[in-house]
Image (cartoon, rainbow, N blue to C red):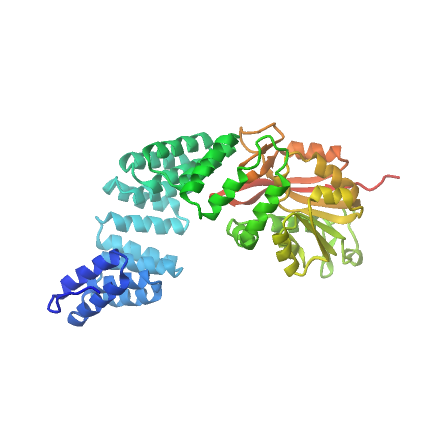
Length: 499
């Protein structure tokens, strides 16, 4: 318990309460604040402390109310900034920007107010305005890492990645001990696919002794993207030492088990990763802006005779429109390769497709898929083994986010062809081979044990298997490290017999 002189003046009590709050002791700070407020109930600096306490304890609405009363008595830049933060947490970005602007008006020389206004303008998708505010803040305090990071973020959002990189470099030179600046600079290089620079920045951070698990994880990402998988494995191992409980680090370390010369991700690796990942799988994909099920839905409506009400949307793959009555019939059966937790099936469940059968390596994922009650049957096993051993034919075969675990596609396309009914479709997704890091030119192993493929290679292998290409369309798959992951939506058909 903190003891204090009962005769102390309110300013002394408030100062001590601020110190306690900064020391992460909000309970003790609140007791001193209450004593100070009994002596001077309307003092603005006490309202500021009260608002900070409410924010620290997760009550932004209460903070907003306290600040409103204080601002009415004595409008000050500090109070407007605090209220801007509270409004931001409550989702009122317009009100937050207005308050930050008021803070700048009340103290035009306060760089923190200008920086806050810049960050909020960036939240409102006004990067050019944000750049101007944050540049003034950096000009006033060049050694402030947060100001530098904010400016670099705004420059990148404004389409000026080279200026953003230069801002990070100047910030690191001015504040070499800033871990946040170093990691942000590495992340920018990754987003720009400048993997060599990302490695150089990460190595400089390591040499300077300013590195954490994220630094080494990002370095591993860059090395893997350069095809330097043995070095990436070492970087991931260092990340695991520094962040043993970080789930992202654990996943990328596991991925480093995939041999650089592998033609597919090993079956045991996939099963282990997804069994450990099953309960977090859907939430994680949603957080990455995962688009594949929705893109597949659009493709199915374009390439299959699916009716909505009295209007038929789509066509037979031969191009001949179907009558509405025929379009209403269920298309299937449907085989969902690598079905996972059933995300794609759920996204398509209102379309006239079925019955559904799923195949996946992971028992944990299959357990969650079964709970959705979409599938008539679920099978645990490797998709190529299933296609080879099960003689059934299918009216539609799907593979959402599956081909990325196969480097060479010849075996899977050869196995798919005889399992499609004549005229039936295969619809799947693949990650695109982008940039100069092309592996063998057809496909390459990237980070997390995933493969990327060249469009021409996909078309060539499909044709060799007897499948007709209906579409290989460029589509963003999801976002990773804040950047879009380029990929393809693939539609292939087993042609009908001629004559």
